[in-house]
Image (cartoon, rainbow, N blue to C red; front, top):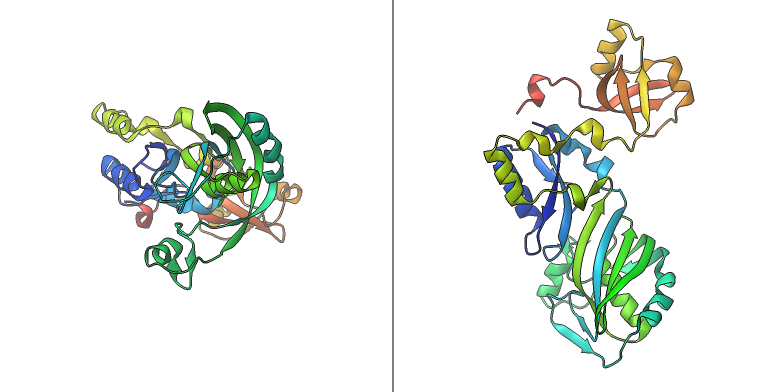
Length: 303
């Protein structure tokens, strides 16, 4: 079996542990996720099996959606509820005050990566430096917040936010910065990733559900095919190819075809030869080259 399984990760489980559980359930060696989800967070974690692990570069950059609870009144060193309190404030935040500052965080913004994060500085992760008591290191990155809204007030000084954002966005940093904008310390108290690219929480399976479906012999139905996972890419359908051209395209050589003139060069495409899905290809100088092959397996691709 190969493809992508949309896993519903619970709070308290690391992304690596989720991969290990999927590897055991599917009894496969080649397994990997498409982007880490913090241990304290829950939600969508797409995990690739077999040759689908080659899809990382095509899936990891997709837009994410989160539901995050922001808690005002204290800030922590990890910017979430798992850290030590480093600041307290008595201010009360209203729904109107919160809604008034949110537009300032929409669009391209600059974030300072939290010290308890996996960002590397001089060969060391920031969380390693933090645990060693090192001085704060300011590592900035540009991210994009596509949408940000307050969904509801969950308790006094607590609100549920919906965040649509680019890869690499720290939602806990966003909560911390919203608190700073309102003059009241804040942290992320709950986080659910509801969507990662085309993978939504409604179609996700828990580890327990996957184990149960395995017992019932229905595990294959949980897999999303490589072709379906790449539906966000434009397609290049080369029909009417001679047997020779179809063969050399499959073997990694470039092939010309009239349809290629109307397609963009240098952009990943779903490549087809006479109706058969081959994988991801690129067009250069009017010719198509399959860069990542997902057609019929060769011996070296087999598990």
